[in-house]
Length: 325
Image (cartoon, rainbow, N blue to C red; front, side):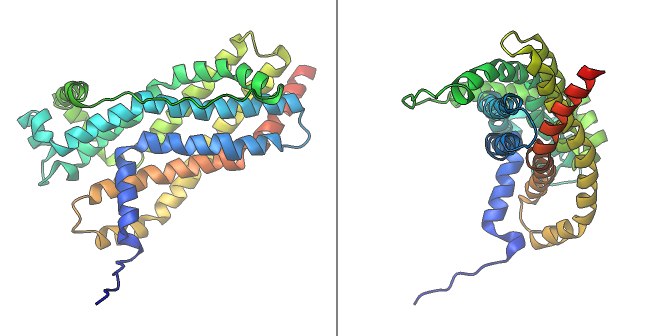
């Protein structure tokens, strides 16, 4: 007899829950993949279609967008992904890597460490901080690659190349074990636990704040590197700098405002979500995933979807205005 499958509903759909759990464990990777698709696709297309802007200025801005997405994704593969996997390893076996006293402090009031807000808060900071700590080298590499994209994509016919198979470094076994032990010792430090408990109430906003700090650092570093570059034409530097600063500023201003409104309006949804998955041991991770998805998509939609045409247009107009005055 054929049994009709049972669907529990949207709030506890297994694919949704699995996706949120993965995002909570790989928040930086989620942001990098979002950036990769948006920067190489939507933002590049929007920039190139911006009216009343010199063609070469659009090409430089599009090259910057493509390089930014590719470099960020590559750095996640090299730096953030191993850190996320190490934290995941500690999550699965905290008794092995954390001191007993630290484990008890994190678990204060809860049965499992996965339900500890302070532990989730501090580990989320560690995972997200890889994006901030790699912001400077990311900008340096991005700006250095812009002339390469200009020469081989926009101003010359691309030379066909055979696809190269790349092997990702393996972080299994001993290296993973060693770094998991190091992270465990760090997480067991009294000052780390004290900090986590004191500021754990900010867990719903930590992704937003670190993303904002990273974007500011990226824009500032990019401006310095563009100005220093010998391979970018002098008359194209300022428009390119403005094209980095303008969308970052507007994204932060509008992103925080929109996120505050959506966050306030989504409280009822989150309460329903919690009730629908009240017995699920992974509920804290699902909530963490929601808190990562919300600001990431909002900031990405503004920066890569709404602002490219405006910022490209305004960057050129600002440059011409300041040059005349």
